[in-house]
Length: 92
Image 1 (cartoon, rainbow, N blue to C red):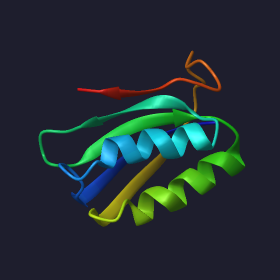
Image 2 (tube, rainbow, N blue to C red; image 1 turned 180 degrees about the horizontal axis):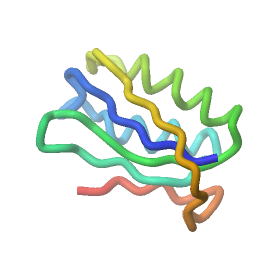
Image 3 (cartoon, rainbow, N blue to C red; image 1 turned 60 degrees about the vertical axis):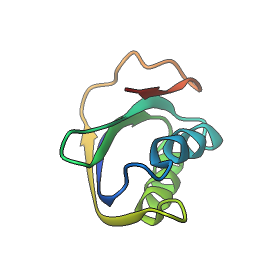
């Protein structure tokens, strides 16, 4: 299963991308994460449904210094060629 996500709030400058990557790797997910110009953080992740649900719950909480206001989450119909189980890339 593959998803696209976007996290809104105080999520840049607080280690959020690193948090996302560590969380994804702990769940065995492949994908990527990046900062957006509007101050949000977005990405894609692929893996088993249960792992993605655990990942989603952690994103909604965020790391200690983040302030997550909203999490947009969209399931994608197509499977990508993301390598499993790793890596999970932090993009600039």
